[in-house]
Length: 193
Image 1 (tube, rainbow, N blue to C red):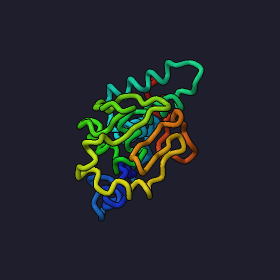
Image 2: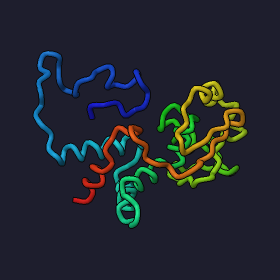
Image 3: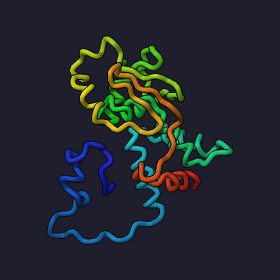
Image 4: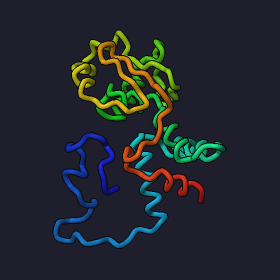
């Protein structure tokens, strides 16, 4: 896709090899221009892979966002994707990547309003409190979590209590300028064909 979507900084393959697969050092030539369809497809794949969704699940999110009247479909799609439980756990800093956050949720390490939740696609509502389950705090997965959370920058739509390892979704996730590296309008256009 030409850019890092794994969220792991210097450990990502695009940093090690910043050229497309199949291209050797000697024949790195311009492959030609990409069509509008190709650009939209690439954006869709970037978003889908960033959030770790299958095609059918992602297309349902786009259809839901497009069908709602009264709200911009791009903002609605962003809100739906960002309010997934696995993503909120990642954004609060419980995990270093979305895939690890998904595994944490699937294994029941995260609670929502005091109840154990193991559905990564659960939609977190404003006011919901996410926390690490008491029985899971001693796991190796959460070793050094407090120190990591001290350095972590929480988005403006969430609050974090580092001492109690609890985070709250203060409001619905809103699209901030420069926060995302993909074009959600292009994704909506891709599915409206």
